[in-house]
Length: 232
Image (tube, rainbow, N blue to C red; front, side, top):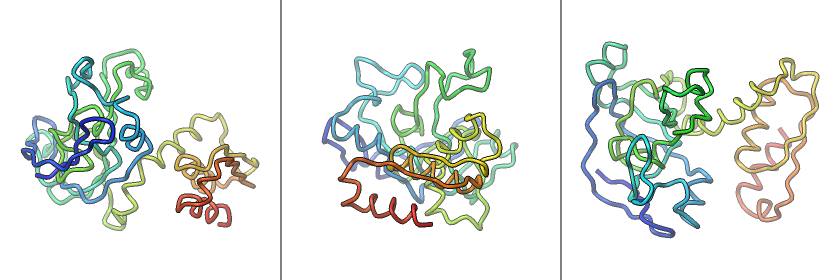
């Protein structure tokens, strides 16, 4: 299959690599859409940072560059292991993937705070995916990483679920329950700031203000999108 793999700063190559085979408790996914995260851009410009090098392989996956990139992605199940089939996963189902890699044994994972697991990583940055991930034809991931998507969901939009979940996680941990009584200032109008804006609107917040002092955002497509959001 084809895969966009990171080799070094400024060096991402389209390689032909073996297609992954789902292992126990895994599903194989045909990738349909993948988003480019700010972290992907940073890795390309100044990396490797999060991506692992031979001198520091990932503690859970053992992966080192070259790494297949892409951790904001969705697609359809193309193959299931016996265990995943027993869980109800079927070929053809649309899914998005929670790309986080965790140990599932530490105190933080045990208390439901796996976002701060000391062994954290991401499929598409730190290995996993059977060699593939969002910027490849396919990937293989544990079925627990998958979230079923109904046919009514446009998969072009489903690729945005991972960054949108960042904003929802922040609101869910803010300590506030009734956002209709709040006027909110969002500092920063980048992708996560826009995620916060949409989540605040979904929560019924009052007035929402966005402060952005980076002029370059106003001269590109992201800036225009931000201005559009402010007028919704």
